Structure formats: structure tokens, C-alpha cells
Image (cartoon, rainbow, N blue to C red; front, side, top):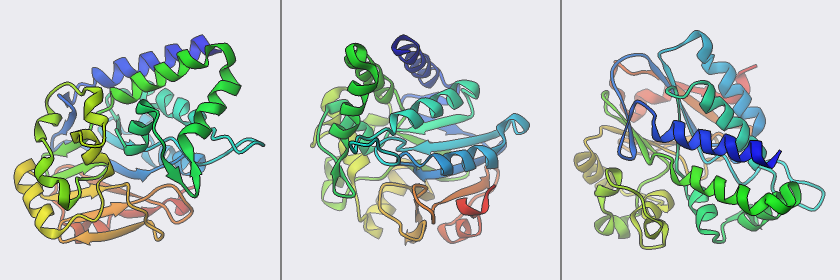
Length: 282
């Protein structure tokens, strides 16, 4: 069991690095096909199953699915330990089944696991809760499994950029950190220092409350038109948080996804019509 899990993580890492649409740390999608965009999953298995059903990739070879923030949340054992790693492993099986159609973005909870740093969710310190659950599950091989998880998470891309102007990432840097953010992170190898509090991966994945000025500057610098982000809590499943930004969440009963074509340009307002409530999917 531990060895098969380690091999799964290693295979997923290879598939992620070798994704044919990847250049550097960005997935570049052209004008062919369509895209399904999800927000944070946080261990919500039923919503993930709904995404899989909606995407129906076996019958849609030109469709892409964007996933993010799989870990930390969802089911816990009788001691309150986080079992979201079980969903992570299932998501990676999905990635291996459709290696060039599934693209999983790096998130702040991923960086916290890699760095073994504290991260709170719903009043719980999730990193410790998940690590202890892994110890319980894998016993003497748990450190090997944790290392394989970290190596996989570190291999993930940071963003998806589409020819139609859509830019998808877990978040964007906060206003106060925008001038410290190095966009070269999208092209060069990610180092552990980049995940530290002052590093560019940290700034990208942890940022909140972006101003319109920042969004306009980011659009010009990144060559984007409309941003679709996760990270920031969305009780209603989504919100327009700027003239050119929409934020979505997929980790609760009001969660949603966005489904749109790649050959058409969208404003944030136009993307409202492309929102699908996950609860509506059988």
C-alpha cells in the first residue's frame, strides 16, 4: 500500500512536469476546445465527483479541467485528523487518466504542506492534522509518503494562461506585495525559498483583496484580460471582485464551477453566465 501510493505520486509528478501544454510554470491553452474551471476543493469529495461527471472527459477530448487546493478539509477520522489526502490520491488518478486535460494549480495549502508550516482552516491547524493522519495510515513509511506528496505538490504549475485572455491562478499578490513579486517565477525553476513568506510563490498563492489598480497592472504585465481565482472565501460560491476578476469556490454546498469555450473572449460579467452550481450536477 505505501509503495503503490508513492509510485502514484511519482507518476503524477512526471505527468505534471511533462504536460504538453506546460512551459515553465504556466499551462498555455490555445483557442481549441473548452475549459472547466473550479475553485478550492478542500477535500470535498462529492463536489469533485460532480466536476468529473460534468466534464465527461472520455467523451470530450478537447476539454480541459482546472483544479486547485485539493487538501485540508473534508472528512476527518474519529480523532479529528484530516483525511483529505485520500481525495488527493483520487485526483491524481484522474490526472493520470487524462494527463493533458487535467491541470492542477499550486495553492497556499500546498505550500504549507511542502514547508511543514501551520495553516488554519475552520479553527483547525490543518497541516498537523493531515500529517498525523498520514502517520496513522502509513506508519513506518509515512515519512516517505509525505516526501512524495511534497515532491508532487512542488511540481504543480502556478497558472493557466489562455489565448482568449483568461488567466487562472490560485490567487494574486496583495497590494502591498505587488512591487516585490517577481514574474520570472512563471518561467524559472521553483526553489523552496520561493515558498517562504517573502518568496514569489508565497506572495502569489497567499495574496488577498487585490485592488483594481493592481488588477489593471497585473493584466498588463501578465498579458491577461480576465482573472479567475480561488483562495478567498466565497459563501455564495462566487463573486465579481473587480472589473476584470471573478473568484470562485468549490468546497461547500454553494460551490460552483465555470464552463466556457476557449475560442471566445470573456469579461468577468460575461463569465457570470458560465457559472454552474455544483449542486445542480448529478
